[in-house]
Length: 388
Ligand SMILES: [Zn+2]
Figure (cartoon, rainbow, N blue to C red):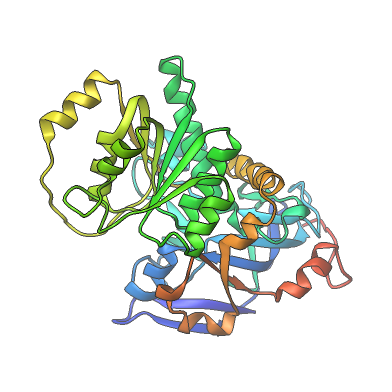
């Protein structure tokens, strides 16, 4: 079978389309999945262009891809899946440290040792291949109505994890959130905006993209108010976030920082409303330093009971909620999710992708889209369940 491999041990990451062994089921709890499509995100860009990521121990190269959608073609007797099921797959696998209580209790997304592996990113092969096999406990069923956007389940799981955390944290008070501010209008920001709209919040999206860009149009398509940032959006730039928030005279119960631009994260702390939560979801590599009004910031965080959390990765529950939420978003804003997918590539084109030209979200169609319906209906090509 074909797979996209990145050589991470050489000086420049060589991206190759390789012919490798198709995986074979060995245990009754495994499924073999035919990959339909893989979403690409900033992590994939870093792996494909900047040598981020690591191959499995003892290997030179890594099969990339972690945002998956595929069809089960073989299912072990103990999996609960059957051939023809549409599925996505969790990314992170637990570490092996005995005292990592979260990994030992099914919460690898809260791994404390940092020695977890992640398929397609860190120490484990990903899904950008024609087939993958996995233990059923990491595989999540996707309804066939989500066939054309189900690969968004992974980024949506990131949004769900945050929302789940926020709900737990906000039990500290009587919380009746009304407004959310989303910083950034990439796939995560747009999914966050649509989710907050579905949850009944008034949503504001603040981002660098022009108002008539695809991002701006999509933000408005899910009923959010869109505002283009001028300059970098932080204090000192032409129109800072603080000035904007002052101008619209709103107070935010929830802020999702999805840009990873760290000065904006600090700016967001100052505009967060009393009793609100600021969730930081993005990262910037580097060692940027900046001046902040430490006393003012500290004062407002303390006196207004503000909460700032970081969040990464997601659990099985978040994937399951994410799959459900995608259905809700589609019902409320028909076509929105497919519009988020702005670029489509074939396996043969991956090595030449110019990430700077991707408007919102790119996917790789491992199987041409015209074939998906037929495969999802369970064509004769699909083998039926067997026992191992
Ligand atoms: Zn761990």
